[in-house]
Image (cartoon, rainbow, N blue to C red; front, side, top):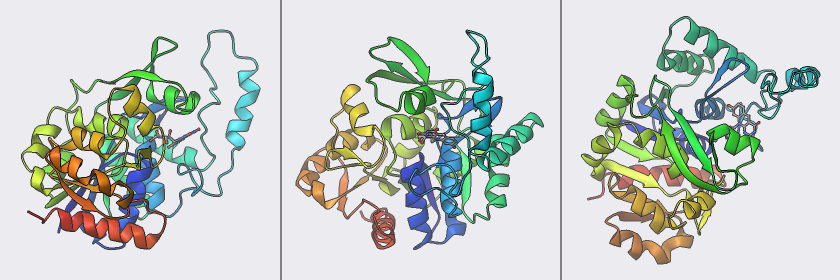
Length: 321
Ligand code: FO1
């Protein structure tokens, strides 16, 4: 059975790793958010693609959930010499976004290949091959889409990483926008994956800033809506809290209920089933009232066994009528 997984970063990476334990990796493809992508020091950085690649290669730093384990930071330390002398108004040598010494090689390679005219789809496949991945990973688009976050108190709009990393996602947001999404299109490979795979799983990623940029591409919602019986979403909200990151706070700030019911309202048009954790079982009827079937199974991937069962139940749900 072929499976396409709609992916953000850490939650999706962990789900794909779990899926690899119970399903053929050759039949698995990830369609990955690139709205978080950024350019630092002139380098093209694709955090969600890298988080997934490193996780599936068992090279991720397990505590941070991003970057490589056993990483060193000598290049970042050396940058401090230049931040001391940069003139007022210069953004050169930013040190708030941490690029490890080994991680830099990935960004060097991606940047150089893009400069040669390769598409992000091709470069992503090359990087995945270099790390020995059996799954296919696809950027959602080969064009530039940037998630922009409006900050309530500062009254400005900043690119996602300036909210997430620079401000440690600790400030309230008032809006999110996907710059360039109206001009971009779903990559041909992603389109094929989302339309031809027998099952689509929406990973437990932030619905507002990880899955929403993919949905902002014009083709995606109609494509998924047309096959919603075979689309299964896994709630990233468990017991009213995000599994990781600011999804729960963002939902409140942007006017959504931070619960599996709020998640159901977001996904009901495009997914037939919502997978929720047993702690949310009491809300199952309310999720059904939003028009979704419900699968109740532990969804906090605290062990390989829990992850495997979550993956198994998610795939099985797509066959449930
Ligand atoms: N996340 C952080 O919290 N701090 C960082 O300095 C940081 C650097 C970084 C570098 C490369 C990369 O691929 C990811 C990195 N991340 C960092 C993670 C990333 O910014 C976020 O986790 C995602 O964008 C959210 O999905």
